[in-house]
Image 1 (cartoon, helix red, strand yellow):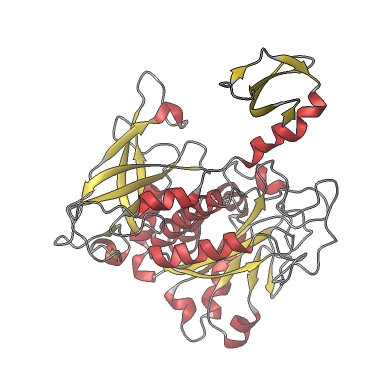
Image 2 (cartoon, rainbow, N blue to C red):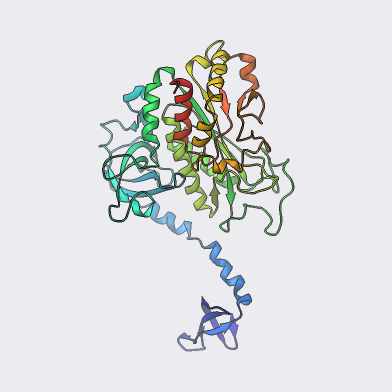
Length: 434
C-alpha cells in the first residue's frame, strides 16, 4: 500500500471495542523502515484484511523439500492414533522407532483366528512399545493423574510420510490398566472372539459432509442455498459436485495404507459424500473404519477443508448422514440363507432401543435429528424391515431377496457412531443371543 512517498510493507491489527488499532510498517526513500504508532482505523475497512485469517496455509512445496530428506535405514516414524474422550474425535502423535521393515503390508495376527490385532512379522521389526499421553487434555483423565496408556493394536502404511513410516491404531487404558470410557474396542474384541465360528462380516457406508473453515458447507453459496436435492447423488460436473479432490486423495491414501476400502460416491446433499469399507471380518471392521476416518480428516487438512460427521449438519429439507451397516454370518451367505436373515431381523426387532443407544455417541440424541421417517430414514421410535425399502430400519437388498442368501443392511447407525459399538451390538444380538 502506497502512502505518499512511503510504502506500507506490513500490517498487524489489534481489535478494540470500537475500532481496530492498526500497526503499519512503512519504508521511506533511502531510509531504514520505521514503525508508526498505531492509529484507530474503522473496522469495516479491515474486514477484507482480517478475512485472510480463514485462509491461512503453509507452503506445501517448501514442506516437500524436507519430506524428501533421507532418514537412517534403521529408523522410522510411527504415528500413534487413538479415539479421544469425546468418542468421536481422533488424536495422534509421532515417535521414532527402530524399524527394518521393507514391506508396508500389515497382516492379521495369529490369535483369534485372524480376528486379532494386525502385527508385523517378527523378522521385519521389533514390537511397537506401549506409549502414553496427557489424558487431561483429551477428556480422558484428571490433571492430577493424567497419564493414559496407548496400546498399539493395528498397523498401517503411512500415505503421508511414505517409506517405512507407519501409523498404528491404539487402544487407550487408564493408570489402573482398565480401558478408558471410550475404548469400546476392548469389549468388541471379546464379542468377536466368541462369535468367531460364525464368521461375522461387516461393510460400513460412512457418510460425511465437507465444510469450509467457517463451517459453511463446502461449495454452497455464502448467502443462500444451492438448488434442491436431485442432481447431486453420484453427480458429475461443476455445480453438482463439490470437493472431489478430497475424496480421490482419501481413496488412494486408504488403498495405500492397507485399509479395505471398497468404494465412494457423491451423496444426495451437495458437499456430502460417502465411502465404503468392507467386507471385513470381526474386529478388523472397526479398526479399518476408524483409521479411514483419521485419513479423511488428515487429507482434508491438506486441502484446508473441514470434515463433519454430524448426522444432520443442515436442518430442513436436506438428507442427513448415516453409517449404514451391512451384516452377515456364514449361514446367511450360504444357500437359503434368507431364513437366517429373517431370524436375525426378528432378534433385532426385540432390541430396538438397545441398538438405538449404541448407534450414536449420545445414546440416540444425535440420531433424533436424523431418524425422522423422512429423507430415506426410518422413525427412531419404531422398528421396521422391508425389501429394497430405504425408509426401513433394516433393508434387505433386492438381489438378496431374489438369491435367497446374502446380508442385511441396518440403516439406523448415525454417521458419528463408533464402529466398534455398532459391530459389537449386532454380534451380541444376532450371534450370541444376548
